[in-house]
Image 1: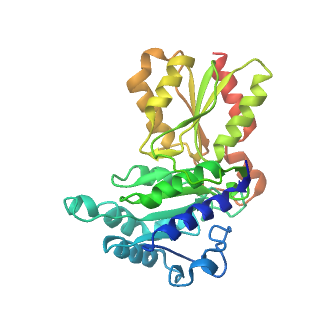
Image 2: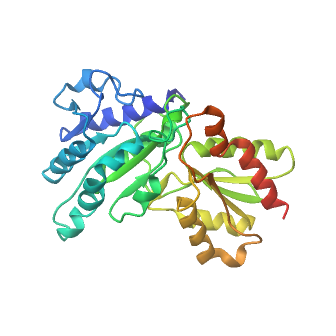
Length: 325
């Protein structure tokens, strides 16, 4: 099977859907001639022109406001933010308008809007350009949230998100854009709300998403040499959340760790952990363990940023503690 980068797979998904549906258009900062800050729209402007691939002013509130207006009047816009941190500048539009419009109209108004958001730091971009803010939006009813970890997943999930009649935010880790993986040439879609068991194991379940999937898989391979068999689940979608796959794994292994790059307090891991306790408490042989970034602003200093974020070594060390309790 051919290999594409994460960015290439994303562009291919959007291109395929834009060719089929003329109501789809793309908008954001530097997404046109420049091809996106991370190559996330490369070739789209040349193929579809500036009417359907639009460079916008530097105003996140205006981008989302324009996209919302287009969505509720018959278009299917895709809006891109340059960093997850900049969602703060469009918070009112997203939380109070985009997420609630269909509900407040009694279902009469649809909001088929996809918002693509690079996130995650590890590029030494400091505290205002490195945050993981996904739990803010998971907490907002009316939004669907995806966090693809591979080229295969990003293509399949984006195609589904573009066709969705409700607003979707796609959180895409900046460090994944140039990673490569197998992507079929034929068209396919992946459902939102369906996790994937990336690695089967018997000793402990590790639940994760986005970049941390790769770090957890690497940690699992290292631990296998020490006789510890780790099952790794990639959530892929944060809302809706596939808790059934998680619980089925916990019932098998009886131990669980939840890993995310976001700050530990109030992160997605807290919600998942509570749902496990509510539905599978009797199967747990040890407390649910959360592994996340320290509760500090992301440092600019490379050694400090690496210290704050979960590394393969930290993940492996915490898993050992769980297994050997």
